[in-house]
Amino acid sequence: MDSLITAAARALAAGDPLGALNRIALRDDAPALALRGIAMAQLGDLARAAKLLRRAGRAFGPGEAVARARCVVAGAEVALASRELGGSPRALDAARTTLEAHGDRVNAAHARYLEIRRLLLLGRIDEAETMLSRLDPSPLPPATRTVHDLVAAGIAIRRLRTKTAAAALARAGRAARSARIPALRAEVESAARVLKAPAARRIARGKERSLRLAQVEDLMASNALVVDACRHAVRDPGTLVSIAGRPVLFALARTLGEAWPDDASRSLLVARAFGAREADESHRARLRVEIGRLRRALRPLLRIDATKRGFRLSPRRAREVVVLARPREVDAEHAAVLAFLADGEAWSSSALALALGASQRTVQRSLDALAAAGRVQWLGRGRARRWLTPPVPGFTTTLLLPAPLPGD
Image (cartoon, rainbow, N blue to C red; front, side):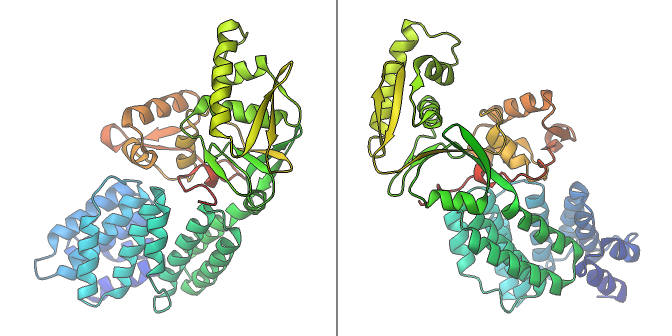
């Protein structure tokens, strides 16, 4: 490796992509192509970075297995940053195996962290946590230790373990300062702001207030019956019932929860559950059927009694009823799409469909509706089109991201 390549590599390791490009911008040999690709990725031009890394991988000879594997790992990181989640992880796994066999433990660990971050984005929290627990970050350089702790914090946040998340972010901050990479420190600081930002609203007895993640965690551990509008579930201290796939039942449960300790009128329940402005006999008959279904679904948690005006919810064990709502109401049909786009990254519609477990046509309809309302914007054309939206200042959407329900 010549002196210019060495100097460019050191500049990239220090987070100075422009310094690296000043040394190798005009070169087309394989090592220079690889470093140019990494530099372009650090500058945010992910499409060009991916092309350069593919060219570099092809340019390295068959005897340069480690260099080719490093290109695969770098390409996988660019794909992750581009939110291209549909590719097969086999190539990355093969590259990691090659790097481990040749003693390149740092890049092999980086490949493993990419696998874990992909699982985290897809909501496969248990797999990500198991894989992370098998890694020992202590012998790794500060930059890699920062990634380890950021991933640990991401898992803890999705599980509503705020103390664990805060400890992981503190370790990440120390490691990022040791790494002396400004972009890495900025990423840690951005992640830390999640713990201080409003994460949800608490609605009880006609009043509402904002809650941070730690306060949400406390609420979930309290003696209250919580109607969770972030995950479409109802829980008390001993039982959790998910009704995420039954929107009519959840609309009724939320309306009854917001009205507690009073009853909710039949006209209000019909409007919330069925979208009808006026309740006729057919609506009232359907309401009785749906209330019966709700009683059966939530029997371990509560009773629903008929009143002269409508229906009243009565918890069996809890002392109070609280509705946990999103920090800012959005169209429920598009809330999950907005939650993913709120990370500030550019997503393809296919990646969103994969992460949401929905069809690409369904996701595309949501994107088109949000674009028409000015909530999202797109870049590129055809298969290269990406969708993004700036995150709402001062708000976190972690409660909307795919994760097991707290307490599972």
